[in-house]
Structure formats: C-alpha cells, structure tokens
Image 1 (cartoon, rainbow over the protein chains, first blue to last red):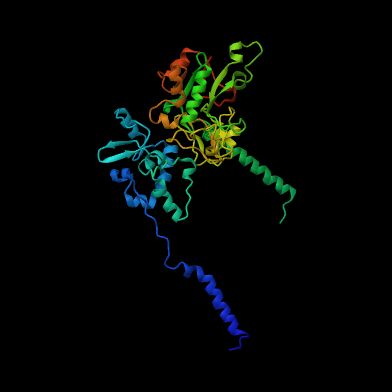
Image 2: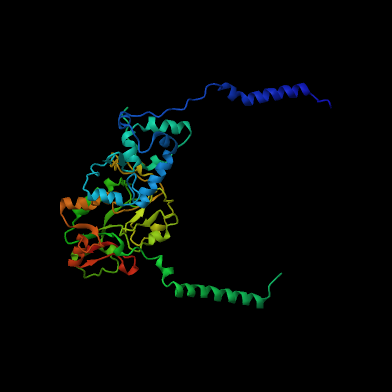
Length: 158
Length: 266
C-alpha cells in the first residue's frame, strides 16, 4: 500500500467533517415529534358515526372529498349513496322534508343515513374544530390543502 | 433522398383528394355527426331551466334587491372599482344590452331604463366550446355550470361570451376592501372563490337542487311577484312557458345564434 501524505490530518478532518454533517441527526435523536391525533368534538362523538367507517376516513378522506366535489358539481349527485338522480327524486316526491335548513342536512332513512355531500356544511358541521381536527395533522405532514382557499372554515370559539 | 417536383405534386394532390373525400364520406354515411357536437340536449329529454324578466313591472328597487340577494348568497365581494368588479346579476342600460335596437325616437321609457342582466344560460353556449379544461359546461337541464375546482383562469370563456356575463377574480375575494364588505363572507354555507378563477351566475344550481327558487327570484318575489319568473321550458304548463305564450318577449343578441334562455317581456 502506498503511503498517504498527511494521512492523519486527512482522516481526522474526514471524521470531524462527517460528524458535523451528522450532528443534526445526533442532536435530535429521540426527540421526534409525535404524530398528533385528531380531536373529536362533542357533536362528532355523539353522532357516533361518520359518512364512512373511521379507518376508511383516516386513510382515504382526501379521495372521498375529491369524489364528492366531482359528483356534486359535475354530476349533480348531491347526497351520499345516490347513484343516480332517482333517489333524490323519490325522496322529494315522498315530500319528506330532508332539505330543511342549510347545515348538515341528512335524511334519516332507517339504518343508513343519507348525508348532503359538502365539506363546508356537513363535515365541518360536526368537526367544527378545524385547527385540532384537520390542521394539526396536515401541518405535521407538511401539507397545505387548498380547500380552505374557497371553502369557509368555521369560526372556532375554543 | 430528395423528392422531385413532379412526385411532390402527386403526393400533395392525392392527400388533398383523400382528405376532402374523408369529410364527404362522413357527411354521406353519418350526416350531421360533425355538427352534432354543437347542439345540446333536445328539450324533450328533460328539464330546461329558463328565466323570464317582466320589464313592465321591474324597477330599480327590485333590481338592486336581486343583485344584493345574489351577491350575499354567493359571497360575491364588492371590489370597489369597475375594472376588477365581480358580478353575477346586475343592471345595465337598454342601449348597452340591446345594441342595434336603439334609435333616437325610441320611447323615453326604454331609452333611460335599466335592464336586469345575468348569464343567459345559452342553449348553444360559446363559453363551453372554448373552455380547455371543461371547467364550464352545459348540464343536461340547460344550466351553464362552473366547476371552480377545475378553472385555470385562462379567460377564454370571457372572450367567447358575447354578453359579458363572466367575471375574473383578479385578486383574492377575501382580501376585498373591508369597509365595502363588512363581515365577508356573508354566507357561511357557500364557498368563496380563489384568486385566478372565472365566475358567473349558475342559476343557483345549489338551490334548485333543493327545490328552491334562485336567490334573485326569491328576492324579487318579496317585493312584487311574477316580475322574475323561473321555470322549466320543456314543460308547456310551466310559469315561464305561460308567460312567454301570453306576452311578446325579446332576448339579447339573438342574431348570434347562442339561443339565450333569459327572456325579457317588454
């Protein structure tokens, strides 16, 4: 093996250099921020169920919202479970007042609830603690969904 | 390898013949198919929403009430200047909305009268034909709808609309002057828009879905009934059809062939 000129200094420098580069990792070791858990409001807890089962909502709520915005605006299917326009027509012709009021409309049709598909007036009607229910997780994973550019978030009193 | 002039002319001539033949073949085998994309759903196949405005009974009080109700309902801000203003329904002078109709001997009544104007929800809407993202399209019930999620703000539709019915958000509507828009947004159940999208009247799609009248019609009805009439053109017994049958009505710029669905009884 050939002799390395100034070997000691170079290796020492390398060790110090690598150490400096790694220092943030050592510095923050064991201090990882805990993933926040969404907080449920009283109203959400009382309702006992969401528009879909909890595990589904945890993983797929963004896909659900994307589908909602498409079907509501473009296909005029404004209620959950409404595969075609027929359901609403039937309900309306039954003169069942499902459409009273503006917030959180749903028709209690026995076992399965029918919800008005709206982020702003259905989701946030129960989950009106947006900062604790939505924002803290989104911040944790570094997301800034642009939903709130247009959709109005509830005024939080807490 | 190059191509000499003789061969080039042969190829060019042959391709032209084939292309012309192709169009002719489509016209013969499937007549009208090329033009079919311009037409919309026929009346017999469902609802066709339309509005009739009775100018004989419309006054400025009603017009202002309609505009206020609509803009409150849909969180349309007052931006404070006419250059960037956003409007869904507003009043405009006769000579501006019926250009070519005015003459110096016209009745004083119409010369100085304001008309209430909004998106005409044309049967053959030019705005929808130019939209590159299909953010605006015609629903089967005739409503020319906007999908704000999809609008990229190219403003082709604004250039295409012959009625100036569309407005562009040059700024964030939530940053509109606060003194002009106290407590904005006024309706917590309807979204605002974001900077860089085009918006317009949607015939209150969210209200008619619930069996309610559009906000402007509701506002007008509280002052005087049957001034603004909203209904289904495909139903011969609907209020709009009755009003159109019984009275002489005009539409804006019919010569353009867009077939507006907002009618004025004069």
